[in-house]
Image 1 (cartoon, one colour):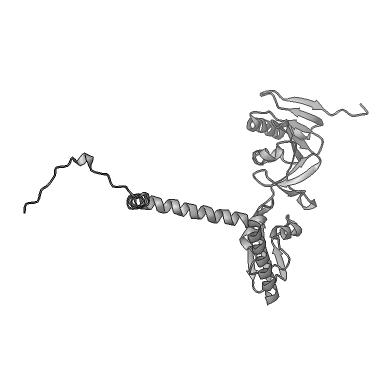
Image 2: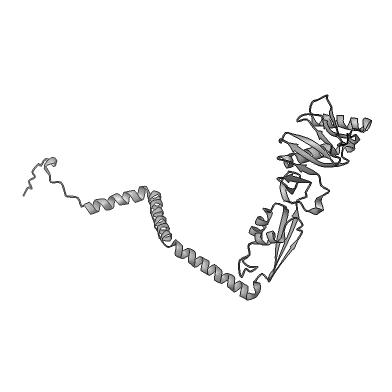
Length: 281
């Protein structure tokens, strides 16, 4: 018996219906194989976003809980014998002890265990007269603060108040009675240029006797004011040459000891003098 076959055009064969779910699964498998790392990154980002959103919703409760736990821990440390009971300061002369204590920023029931000594040291370093600062915690309950202070080199008077300044011209404290031996500079901008003028005068010893102040004029030039009432007007430029000239006149003619109220050296090569006017003349 011979089997018979019929030729059929393949284009006329029925197309099998595809399963959408199966196609989606196959597509997802292809994506996973080809882009696994990218998919994992997207999923991780979504998880982190969800966590962040959840934390944002409960942020106030978390902060309150953390603060409460911190306060309880601090209280427990203090009750365990680590409460800060004694604070000692050393090295302060220009810096008020009250300012040092305020910079420590100690909270109630503070203990040596939770006291942040480095943060306190950084706050103390911001005080104007402090050069260096060291803080030691001595367990169980002592804190030692030791500072070194900047060296004042001059007094600066501005708007009726006298301050101490360091070699950079920075204001470090109000001047007390114990600093009357420091040079006095007066006027706007005087502190910034004080050391330049002070050092220039140190090279001319014959001019230093009887100086009571160096007055900055218009933040451009200097006047030297003497105890006798004499005022020497220096030029804006060429101060070194003017001081040499003035010292020469002092050595040869004792010009600073004469009965004068003004010596004007502002114009190079010219010395203008003003005699003292007496009431009985």
